[in-house]
Length: 156
Image (tube, rainbow, N blue to C red; front, side):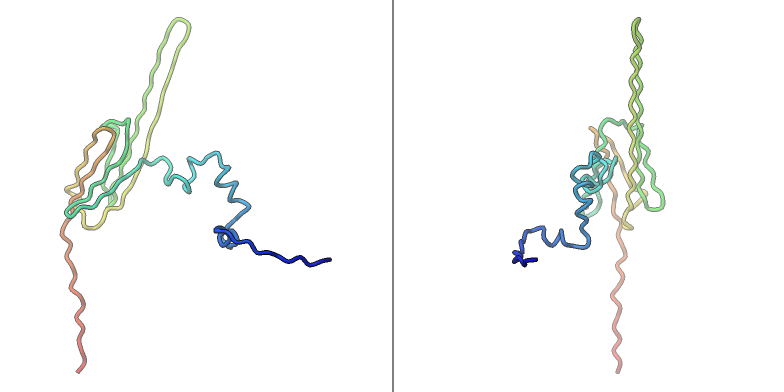
């Protein structure tokens, strides 16, 4: 047996690959070669939930939810124990009968989204509107009572 001098190679991924938390055996199988990348939370976040924007202003919050293809009647919005629950369902059916054939088409779209509201939202003043595929909410803030800092009592 002969000894050969080992030349250590360094790369930006050296620490990652040699880490106990990195599983090289399954990394390529699970991420790069997975045919179901659409369902993979690593790549696109939450499956089946529409995109959401939340903006905080001085006196209110604005929420925009992208839900194209729905109409106002397709939505159900509830407020339950501090959660704003948004769901929508849409079903379409089309049938065409001719002498030689019958053509049937159908589609079903649905989603659910729940948001835990901050304590400083006036739940009774939540407003929603749907326009051009965007479901918008305006959540008015209420004044929060600021607790006074604890007073330090010095010992004499």
